[in-house]
Length: 359
Image (cartoon, rainbow, N blue to C red; front, side, top):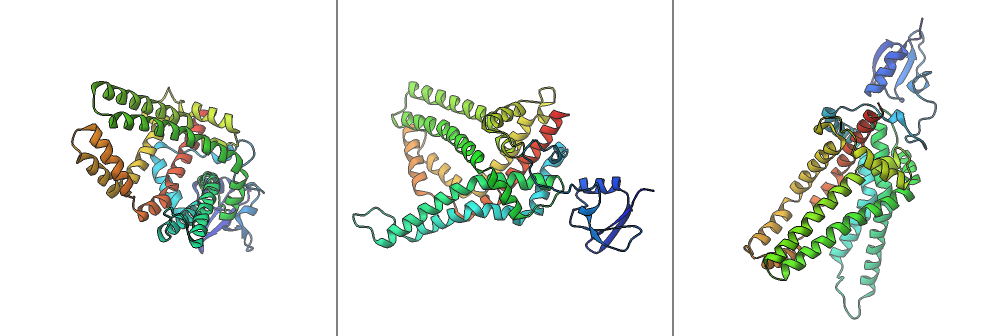
């Protein structure tokens, strides 16, 4: 007769159950390695991770090679609720990762708000020290951002696999990916920045030069090129974080496989393809960002609208408003705290899309 086990969770006992049933409970997230367990014919309690054949002796969150065990199936309909469930379950760990880069950044902003940083001929020693400290905090926030990015991938993948992972174990694994994530992050950021800042600057320059049929045509042409290129970048960079961390791919391979996975699923209905599901997730997050920053967005809109239909005055009004109006500090904090929702959703989409493609 096969061994049967009793599981104790929060003081309640479940079972007896054989190994097949225990594996099902583990997959569903109902059984964790830290739960108490005993054989049905014994009164001695131990931990579930000591049950032979149920948990691996060593369970690092990310392997150096491909990690198929971190690829549980996630249906399209369950990605959003599962994202919220994972975020809620690991809220304080996600918050800890967020504070890694948010804390230094907030310190730098607070110092800038309370110290006179206006350029003068003879700045005080206090001002110089404050400016140097603020610069160090900003640099620290940038340095810790790759750890934050990798940590989100590792933590979400572990939760999706029904595994427990401590905050410090997450950090320990995330630090190992720092060089690769840092390079890719800077590369992706610069690509987006170039194709947003340069075309926007061209459009504003044309608008400030005075309205004409030729200038309007040039502005619309540049805008169309910018939208097309950013769309291509979105497709190519869609899954770079997941491939770099969860599949341990090097830089060229992460970008190549990201592009291939984003373009896969041509035999599926459009709403089930990775690309359009990713667009939906990012669009939902964009709506949340706009809602959190609505006072700032509405002020910019009103400032540009009050200038009438003259593109020259509209551009001047927009630039002036952007200079004088600042986003809400509390909205920025809340946005940073909620941002792991976006990362978790993308990880679940990656796990589902990658598994479906392999199958």
